[in-house]
Length: 344
Ligand SMILES: Nc1ncnc2c1ncn2[C@@H]1O[C@H](COP(=O)(O)OP(=O)(O)OP(=O)(O)O)[C@@H](O)[C@H]1O
Ligand SMILES: [Mg+2]
Image (cartoon, rainbow, N blue to C red; front, top):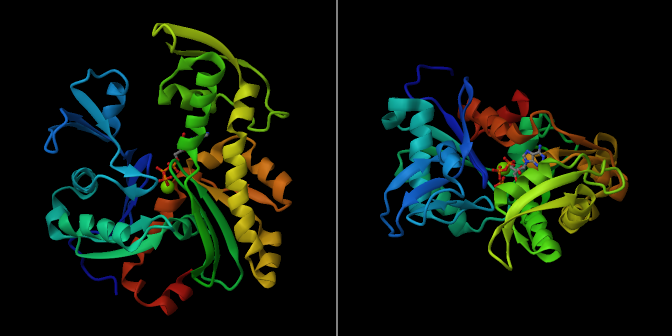
């Protein structure tokens, strides 16, 4: 029953890179970095900035300040600061209505243990959530892609984010098999950084390695249009600023192990797939979501390695929050799966 509602239902996706909040019937209202800047080192260090407003300070602030990532690989690693960040974003999303206690759909990675899951629930309860519905990120991503997850035919989704890659085979509103591997955008950036250290002896910022990644025209070395990128960093021997020309083909080679690890994870889930569902997947293919699915050529690499069609979802970076948002739009039906089956 639609009924009058004081506090909107919301969905929250706390990603390693970005936190996104969806407000019922409105859409995504917050999409900001999951970072905070603190002054000093104590536990109660004052917060200087939260989210995108920290960006301008990254790598520039003096030693008095530090950047904190309260979410790592989709898991809360700094409980107090996560709570502060969540409170800030939810207030930003629904403003002063927040004291009226929203109902929240929250996404979590597939491999969290009960303590990690409980810590997400506790953080949301502590800041005033009235009711919490937890959904696995891959399931939310499939919903947000528009896949018919409540039908008997199978869907296969791979959400390649910043800290984790979530792989799931879904049928009839549930996950048949899944895997969560901690190889995604961050590891790809690290591999670029390690290559530059090993080959040229230069130390570059995380932001610089990410920029190099964005410069690739194709992750497949043979398809990449080889170009020279100018990399600025610090010479590890002299400690002096240093500039180095680097070929993008070298970068493709350096990140290949990470991509093959993701493909290995997909292969393992496919191997566990029952034959009837395999036929569905051969027809419908694999759907890629998450920011790292936008790596050019990654879809074609997966096709050539696994021989199954692959599509990159529209709005790939937002599929998880859009799927969680779909559930928030239908919060009243969440306890009644039959209704959810009908609604899609
Ligand atoms: N065009 C692009 N090409 C390659 N990588 C990209 C592109 N756009 C974003 N990324 C990468 O996507 C990652 C962020 O993806 P996403 O927003 O899905 O992560 P997240 O949901 O915050 O993290 P997670 O779900 O892993 O906890 C970053 O590593 C970023 O470098
Ligand atoms: Mg994510």
